Amino acid sequence: MFKKVSKIFAVLGVMAMMASCSLVLPVNATSNSVGSKVGTATATGYLGVLFFDQDASIQKAAENGGITKISTVDLKSTSILGIIVTYETIVTGE
Image 1: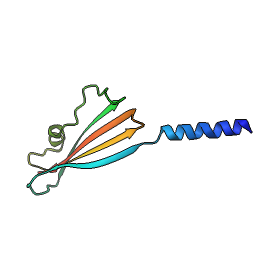
Image 2: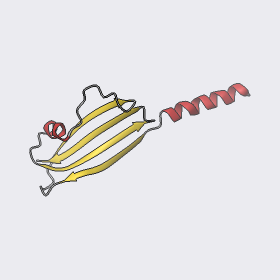
Image 3: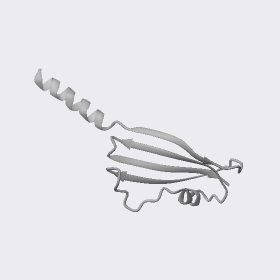
Image 4: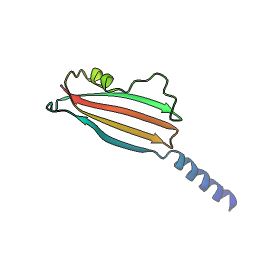
């Protein structure tokens, strides 16, 4: 009986460690019309501080999408127990 309970708790522990949360927030909008182009830039960090020279800036997202006139900027943040954090900047425009 004890072995079965231990296995159940081990599985639940692994499932809890795999839990994550994702949130998308609008950051900015301009008076430019919403364009058809979308650009993204992503940076993944560990322990909240170790990002190893990654670029999730608005400028990089616009460059990746070939956007010269930005319409909207959204920021998507995903966290896995605060250990692995990913920031994604999403830019739309022309």
